[in-house]
Image 1 (cartoon, rainbow, N blue to C red):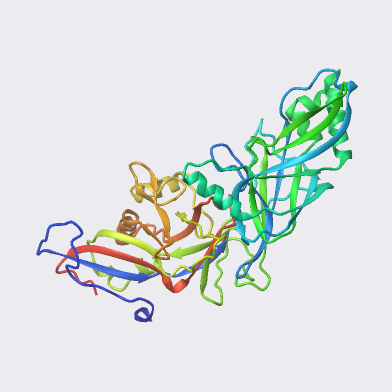
Image 2 (image 1 turned 90 degrees about the vertical axis):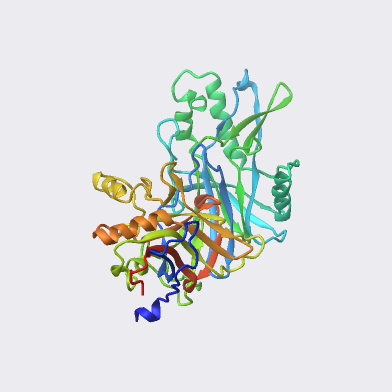
Length: 468
């Protein structure tokens, strides 16, 4: 059985990998197929925090293998600028919402109609003045009244052109959509502003105090109704705002409400009915597809789990008391080619999983001791490092020309071997976690087969050591 599952390519002196020839040592290599499965993680953060990609997702599309993906967003809004004098003498006119695209899209490249609906929120979001807002792809908030709807068409090719222009240091464009909202909603906002202009109580001044304002006006949600693609919206672009129009002294003026640096997040839901992953519904539980396919799907939270057990249990490894691993490459071959408009994640990191298939975190002294045993080849988030002195993460990179993912994890595999010899704790469960584009700010996905995941190691041992 072991011979059927594992195959050995082992030749002496294939290469000395930069080492001077020495008759006392031989260099060998093994190609070891690795077992894998799928996981659905339960906490993929989508909320916008500082110093990271600021993006909200909206839309829906149907994936031919993974089912329908539906993205909606929730956000607070707050006034941008001061109140004008004599606002009590003004009259309300209208209110509009403008959303600025950030050039991200996923799905059909055709210029087809997309429909969205806008709602007030009935439930508060976190107050950025007092806490760090953390929301996840499965977080939802109670919706109130619908205050608008809109059907638009934005050609994705225009967004692709923007990306190309930016790469060539050429001027790009900001694409927006603008829609009128329910006048009754705008009237309530306007009346709150009027009260604040001559406030005599805390309640009257709510419009000019964020902590009070977000209790009175909890935010809005943009929900996807129909479409065949998902777009990214930038909450920090100045064009993304609500505009409240009013007339004062015969002249129309505007109160602006921005969404940047406030609490906001995307909800990304997946209907897997009839798909290759139809049964993948239980969080943090291993799942095998009938097709043998493995996937990574951003936004939804589908990851591929890779096990290193075939390395630590490799036939003959127990007979090698001393091994210097010259290189260890985790590799996925024959990655499925993605259609244009639906690119694969370009980069991932390798995170260690616990026995419960959740990400390991250094939470106590036992975890700290375990990190020390692995000679700083892991950080406190149990992410594999390729240079422990600098704390550099190992990146699992996609090569579009070769249709491969690969990463060298040499130092970590050396430490894993040492733990095997010493009878220590074996950390053998990895999750391939996408980071480019960010997993919580995109819906990129990729497919490959379980048979194509291997670990190739080149190693040096004394010539008298039995390696087969």
